[in-house]
Image (cartoon, rainbow, N blue to C red; front, side, top):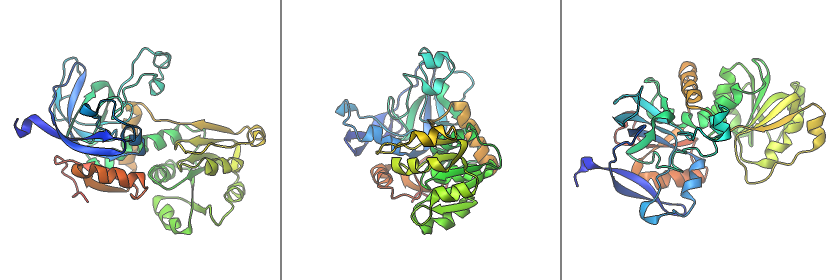
Length: 348
């Protein structure tokens, strides 16, 4: 078996454990393409695959749903895509087109979606197969390692903000300054919102300002709700920090008809009082992700406005290290695996 017949991939061999293997290169099936991966982000959602025991230990699944690379083979039935084209693959990589949500045009909430790295092999690998209907065009100006997190963390925050009930000039709060929050602050500022960042600790004030926040609130030393009320209330609080108690505490700081938009999934429940919702007609809503077109608009907006994630890169062989550090929140702020095909800055 020659080197060009195989590729390297990280697979789940036990709960929380990845192993590197050589896998035979596959030809794309009907409606599929094969991608030579350049970079793949390491997202907390990958734990849904990595933390579970593999269904078939002999054929472990490859995680990763923030994938950037180039098409190297095109299957039958594929139109509009060609070999050498730069593409990305995000969390939602295909829909069933038959469930009630799909039939109503809401493919984001498809009941039987193709989920990259969860229902099919993902991007912790040098090569992967992808459904052509799930491909995202990636601007040539974007570095592969910087573009990768935009396909999930970027899309999630960008889409939630632009679909919110806020207009330019309104007070928009980003709760948390982690992997999601540090992108959300940049998007909010570039969208023209009065951007407020909330996190724990005075040491994050400088970072918040660098990212574009007009005001930073240290939740450990300030009354966040009081500050928000002094600003007239927040039209939107985008909850990116995974703490149900922290999210819930900010609802009284919403303006009339304001929204708490939840994009992080905390381990503890949200606790709300009906009074805070009824008086002021406030709302709590969730936001998941977006369509492939939404993803292309995310990349285009980030490219236009010079919005970039803060990343640490790791060679593919260090997938376990990158995953473990991400799970410990020991990465500032997004971990990205880079492959031998990657031609950008050197990996860490």
